[in-house]
Length: 265
Image 1 (cartoon, rainbow, N blue to C red):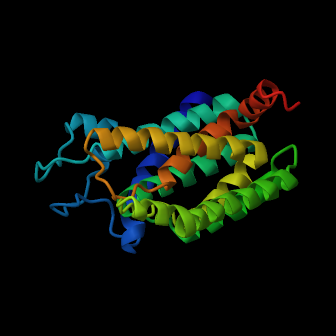
Image 2 (cartoon, rainbow, N blue to C red):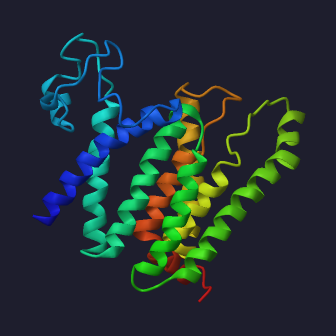
């Protein structure tokens, strides 16, 4: 029953996250008007608003105007449900799962907003930072020092990367005739701090390493497939979110494996 409840909650929350992802960057209310087709503006009937299932029944089209409904909506819903179940499987019944679910929720909303608009809402990052620090005290065992260290290192890493790019690497690219736009901004700074507050120093180290790997690999694939042109920036937020999931679920274990492999312990 708990597994089913976790999946159901994830699907329902994922449906709400779709509303937040769509409306918040446009400065629209997330409560009014009720859910509606973005094309014909007709309200969505309650029986057409079931997560994932309604999209499949309607074959991805609006019941009224017949125009396609983006597959992103059921994707976000299914992804949220899957990650909520994974959080329960990993952390069991307790506050650690609640803490993980809060982080997962923040990551999903902000990553998709960054994909669409290349912004990481400052308010979400700051709120997440506060919740992460509070969760490090509330969830056993208390890990406030690790959370503070993770937040500080996360912010410091992004600040160092931004300064390195602006005052060194950008000039090198220009000398070789490559006008490569900056893909990382100061919005990533509180975002990385938020991640560090939730996953601690070990988890953050793994998260940042994974984010860089994801960024390089996916960037190269996108460039090879012609989806990303030279000089076109790729938002780093989604890669940080992917890295944060790795840090959340496997961070301390991967960190300890690396330390032993490198002979540092």
